[in-house]
Amino acid sequence: MKDTRKLIVSSILVLTVIAALEWSGDKVSEKRQAGEVDPAEFARWFAEQTEPTVDPEVEAAFLKETAEDVQRLDESLYSLLEESRFAELREHLLADASVAVANKDRALLGEILSVLGQVSIEEQDLDSAEVFLTEALDVIRETGSELGEAQVYMQLGRLHVKGREIARTAAYAYDALQVGRWQLQQQQYPEAEATILKSIEINLSINRFGAAASAYQSLAELYKRLGNQFEFEESALKAARLFASSGRAYQAQSVIDQLSETGVSDWRLLSVKDEISMNLQAYEEDIGQIRRAQDFQRLYYYYRNTGELDRAWHFRLLASNSLSNVSKRAMFHRQQGVLAILYNSNESMALANNFLGQAQSTFNRKGLDDLVEQTRQLTTAVY
Image 1: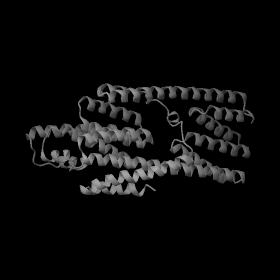
Image 2: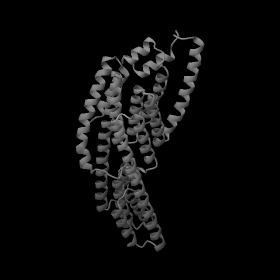
Image 3: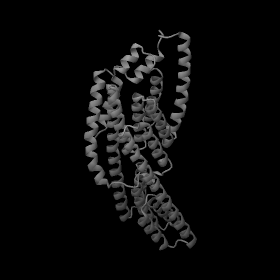
Image 4: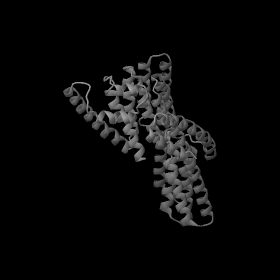
């Protein structure tokens, strides 16, 4: 994950340098506009220049100012990535995108949308990633950048590789839970505990909160059989919290009923009921924010289709702000079953191969060996 985040930061830094150089009109810049030089190669060329095409003092001041901007950007953006502060990072990038729209800078807008797609993949928000990358592809095609188009194809391939990976992970977590439950029935309690805990860990890592809650219920049953009252209550409470905060009121109430039948003190039971009630209320508030964001997003598409891009992006920023404080449990409250995820991931494999193949073809033709290798590694991860 760290390497992926460094790649995202590098993409953003290259955008900063390239955007600052658009005024130069030199031959290398012209080659880049024709799609013959990739952004990283162009940035390296600029740093190594020994024959300035403008006044040396002006260029030296420009280089110093650009280096300082890049250093500040490096520190701030990498910090947001390292701390998984994706909402803040998205807010910064969307604001930059709205400026690019106002300045009618389609090339920069396309690249920012591509980076937003990459960040969404990091968050495992694959639906948003697909929206950003598809828009990036449309915008970059308008600029005629074959290389930019290929880079988006590579990210679309990575998106579908990630979808397949999540499907396989969900299946593994499901199998682990079934094995853990079988071990529980066979009274293999230490083995069952380890297996169920592993299932919980994996499900939480891919935002499958309902599946994790179900596993906590099995863990609570294990501790109940062993007579470990404290561990039983804690596991049951974690199940109820997860159910409630992801909108599963019936299952949360079922866990509370289970607790009330097993000797839990009245004050403890009252505390649990109050907490679950607050979790359900928070979930409803989050769903309200999601619906509000969807309304803003509809207005964004409406004004984009009518050509009023500045107004459209105003509503896109409002949509992003509406989602900024929504919990992951509410964002991922609707989850397909494991069999459905696996079935749909078959299409992800085909799409990944298609997108990565298109990207690799362009990279090969332009002799970009590093990008060819990155694409090849992604292709090997498809299955």
